[in-house]
Image 1: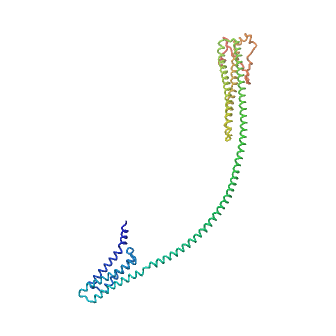
Image 2: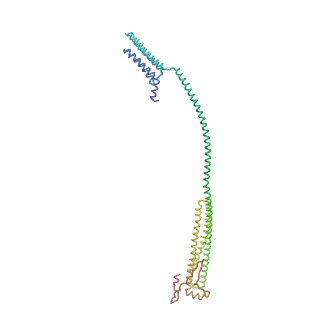
Image 3: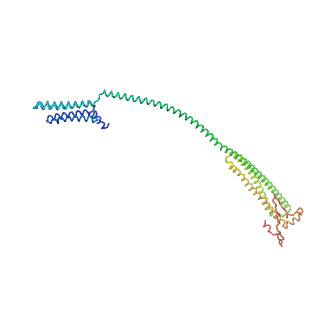
Length: 434
């Protein structure tokens, strides 16, 4: 506990008693001393009265020394009575000596004065004290008045609360009815708005669905048309490849028959072995190489045509499978038709390679014609032809080979070289040309 709080508690418990005892002792000591010293009567009387007034003041002002009014009045009365008895005691003590009667009476006057002051102060405090019965009566009167006021206020409050309750109930009922009516109106408005919104929302969807159906039908028709065109192009390409293969086959057969015919003629000509070996071996090798090359090219062309046809079929099936989704139909059609474009390019390349075949065959026939012309220009061959009766009426100067629409022009025989004056043999210029 703090020190200040302890001090206040101590003063409140023991302060009033200590103040009363201390002031009383001080007054008694002063009276005794003043009597013995012979101080003035007025001074000796004024100091005890001042001490009593001082005790009255501090008992009213000091909070820790304050006591009840009745107790304060009793303390002042007893203090004055003690001062009186002290003064009488001093007077009786001095009566044994040479003190006159007047002085003893004067001391009794001082004692009576302090007693009178104490009684006066006690009466003052008693007059200041109110009667408890009167206090109780006034309190009861005030309580009754307050009770009546409280009852009146409670009654008015109860009436106001009941009125407020009725008003609130009526307002709540009216509010609930208004809220219900407004909710019904709002629900109907919301339902109408939702129906209108749903109808407006369904219209673009229906229009979009109709447009999408039309676009799908158009795309399907377009795809069918393009598929038919692709099939027609594939069939035309196949027919062209077949016709080209047939032409190449016919050309090769014609070339083979021409080569066989030429070989039969050469075998019947009975040329010298060395001349035939030297002159015809490169030609026959070239002819066989060209024949093998044409055969391989024909097989490759046929195989490419078959692969292209299969690829077209696969791409067509894949395209049909990809047409099912409606989204992205133009892109899918473009991607699906890309192999058809590649097929057309492949067919063009194959046809261009096949177109080069007649040129090669024509060049080969021209070379054979040159060889044949050179052989006819030789004196030994001419002599052999004159002796051979089977080929006496035939000439090879106007021979023409026509292969698959490609006319092979006659190749004029090489000019006859001049003969040597000594041995009559031909010059070697035509061997160099070969």
